[in-house]
Image (cartoon, rainbow, N blue to C red):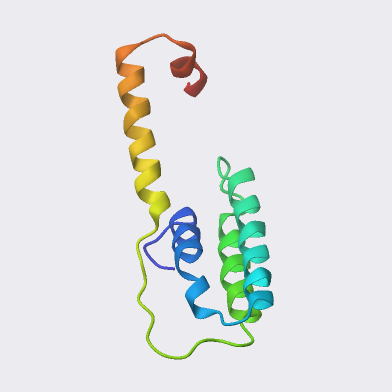
Length: 109
């Protein structure tokens, strides 16, 4: 995953893994791996301890759970989570600029 962070990779996998699965049990197994990866990545995000492990759990979980893959070309999509986070960060910055010294601003420090 050269050039892409753990969080962006997980977003990309969440957005695009399902069309490659033809069996719901396989898809559920992949989702469990993505859920585990999310837990590792979010709990230790500040310290960066398990980010690479989260990436490995997600990619291996998807690859190893797809016992009945769909063949053919499938388009890939940009994760929706990226735009949502970017908009939330922009709104938070506007609130902090409008109300300096509030609890939201102090909690971030």
